Length: 198
Image (tube, rainbow, N blue to C red):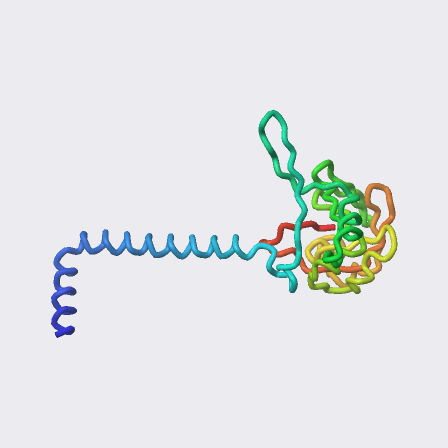
């Protein structure tokens, strides 16, 4: 019985080739669109889930109200994290991230002249205690134990020093201030809100 239905269906499809082509094209476009939308939604839902304890990490935002309109920004006073750690016993640790690129670029010199860089952030010593990014070289818990230490992403280390391992221990002059490279980490994934080269 099913063989008969299939034979009749294929005969009808062969008789009306233009109609069949239009239907197949429409079905193909619909399936490809559905898959693309599913991939996009999956990518959006996966933001910041690469950390082992992502469900325990919270990002602080600040709301500004002016003329009846409100704006939510991810900038908070630097004293907020120490205050939270002091006053809320459930808070285990916290870290500060200051994205300098929202104000200006920095000049980086690895011995071959200045290059302008925009993906630069200052962080405190707790950064790798909160975010467990994979390190190519260096100890993440010692990466910011002293002032004027910097960690590069793998692609940035390759751009400046040829490979990631050669960057470890090298000096960089950033805005005329000397920094020592204490680590090289994997590049930030595309589904991370944090994305810096330095």
